[in-house]
Amino acid sequence: MTDVLVVAELMDGGLRRNTLAAVTLAKQIAEGTGGAFDILSIGEGSKAAADEAAKFGARKVLTAEIAGGYYAEAYSPTVAEVAKGGYGVVTATASTYGKDLLPRVAARLGAANISDIRGASVDGGNVSYVRPMYAGNVFGTVTANTDLAVVSVRQSEFDAATEAGGGSAIEEVSVTSDGAASKVEFVSLESQKSERPDLAEASTVVSGGRALKSGENFKTVLEPLVDAMGAAMGASRAAVDAGYVPGDLQVGQTGKVVAPALYVAVGISGAIQHLAGMKGSKTIVAINKDKEAPIAQVADYFLVADLFQAVPEMAEKVKAVKG
Amino acid sequence: MKILVPVKRVCDPDNANKVKVSDDGSSVTSDGLEWKPNPFDEYAVEAGLRLNENAPKNEKLGETVVVSFGASDVVQTMRQTLAMGADRGILVQADDAELDSMVVARALKSLVDAEQPDLVLMGKQAVDGDSNAAGQMLAEMLGWPMATFAMNIATDDGGKTLTVGREVDTGVLTLKVTLPAVVTVDLRIVAPDAVSNGVTPADHKYNDGARYASLKGIMQAKKKKIDQKKLGDLGIDTGLTTTYPKFELPPARTGSCEFVETVDELVDKLHNEAKVL
Image (cartoon, rainbow over all chains, first blue to last red; front, top):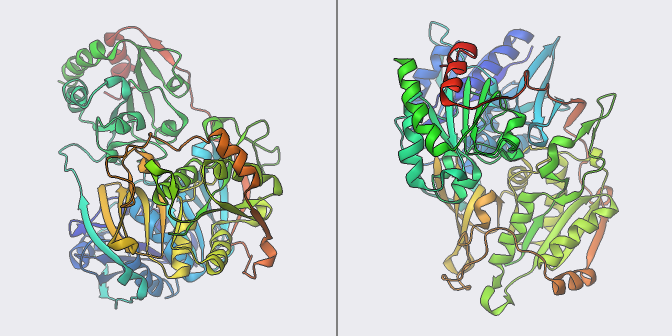
């Protein structure tokens, strides 16, 4: 019997949807071992987020209100204290939030840290995990040697949990702090709001590379196709480094890992570090002048063409097909 | 300031798709691939050197010490970072099978206790294990503040604090941390204007990327000291917290790449064949 604690990610005073990937793992382990799972809603707006988190079948939802912007030092003592309450697994989604926070919690508890898993299996009371390594070129199966395992979940590999009906009981827990938090000051979070779907959750992603040649061309050439497809927009490292688009659009080993139903790589050659972030996509399309580009190793369809002609034409034809 | 930079040796990351798994699945083999410093750690060395120099005058402002774990031939990889300009090295002799993020963090803590650096600067992750954990674990063990995914660093308050821009998945999150601290770096930390130390003039433009070793640097690196210690002599708990019973190669993507010549053909296939439009 393994009880699981999900550490929720909060955003703008509510529950960030990516949390539901970790909830899916928690349900799997709890159901497989005859245990239960709880959700810890921690941060600013913990009570509002708890009301949302209560819809997914947790035994209970715990709240810990910590005002102000996030930094791990302010959260890890409380997460660790709650985790001591009989849990066998502590989990969160492996966003930059989960990746930042969970190893601190693991170190505090002397617990195994298992990062960025793509799957888990339960055999009797034992849980093993599979995680991508070597930029996704090897899958390692891993088990914890400690009673408690701290596990982050790759969002693109786990379906979002669905509402379970009914509501979990909500309980407040006390906030624990230590000296490290007083040595950090949250200065700012600069985010660009977009009307487009979230890159990590979109069913279609259209990404542009250096071949777009400018930030202006991302707007005038690529975006009409992105919007015609109802897609999220992504980018390669080269396009971000060149300053065409902000870093939060980057897909790859740095940046986001995505696995949409359709991934369209426009003017992206396909470095290993980029493939690491998108090769789990169901259908992959490359649009590139160079048919020798390494993106061909993972592409299902490869349009050999000048993107400045092909992309506007494709935007029109996609609109026609989608009606 | 005194900076400690842990550097892991990894097999050539640009050929990571050529690693293999042993027949019994018990290990990953990288035979035939070159050893390289983990790229994110190499960027940390670059960032450390930028923090610790007056670039136009080529003056050093503090000591930069590199730390590595592994077999004795890891010194060759360490020499590459000494040739870039790091001052000395510490090699903790250990077999890769004896190490996981927890053991590495514990070992680093014991070295930090002995060396008393102002800053531990390291890559956000090693590109073989891809765990992205040792820096955070070290910070927690030390009770230090940290900033992960750093894309820029500026010294403030006369060198007592660092302002760090973190590249997070919702944008750029800026923290101010009081030293001593742990900072883990992401790839844009080597952009020309990513590091500002208050001494190198603000208009000084670095090249994009980690610096290359000069011939002089390579010659000097041969004489720089690398202390060797044994993992078992550090007086730490060396118990592994994780076990990897099996490795496997990911299943190949089904089908093969189909080349098309026209947009009409592509849209038709996406609509009627793949049914994703």
